[in-house]
Length: 192
Image (cartoon, rainbow, N blue to C red; front, side, top):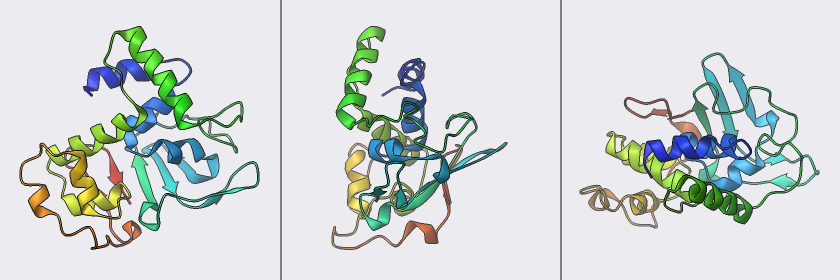
């Protein structure tokens, strides 16, 4: 995915805010769809989004994919809608939305723009790849994106030289990401 493609996709009037959040944050689509206003703290400098277990507006409890996925993301202003509802951030009509619907909307947007067909996970691949190419330390990045294994992070960017040689075995767990802070060199995407 090229930056100009992501900007054009994020200009969609209905799905644009979600697409931009996925592109800027590197979050999983399920994490984004489950976000409520209570997980977001906006300031003039940007927004901190906490990916953590929380109660959803329907009374059920949302949990991240795995314990290593619990983390906070610091994002620049205007990535998260400025008026945060108490309910879902990206679902103003409060109806459940699933990954398949997001990918269908993304496919329609790509077709309208004459772009290759992207999936919601391509935004995550793009962010992780760009961070590694910008010089991010692989273990810190792995923690920042909520991967339990460094090999998972390496799998996103097989074309980055020597990365796979730096990975420990899959059995080696990554420490809780809340214990470390990380900022991507030369960019705004960070982990707190």
